Length: 132
Figure 1 (cartoon, rainbow, N blue to C red):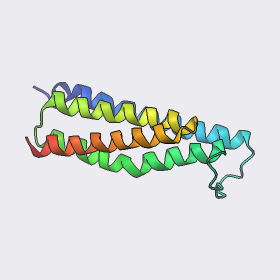
Figure 2: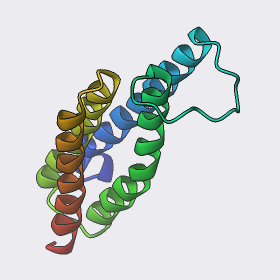
Figure 3: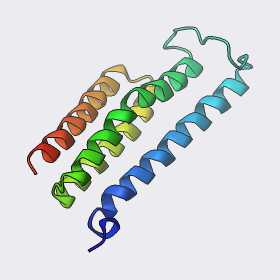
Figure 4: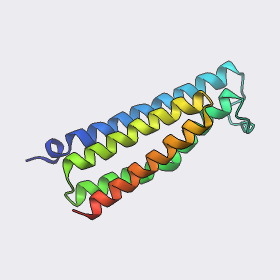
């Protein structure tokens, strides 16, 4: 059986994560344009500013994406359970989507909670890969 068939749902989660990242960049850019933010200049750290929150969403996703990719690859290359790998990968994507919504809405406690859940998903991927 082909790898694409075995880990198809996991690969779809990777694609969904790529789409989510694209959407986050578009939101940050649109908000920056609307606020007449000068491209390339620093965004002032102010959680009341939607441009800051959107740029932090992109930055935070960039901080965790390499771990997600490596942990997912680890699972695939070790022949980990396709179902468990897909569940953990999709849970991570869902957490990152919820994280963005919470950050855009400036819901700090919910944002931190969902961030923690996303970290648990990454840990789960590493455990799934290690147990195979």
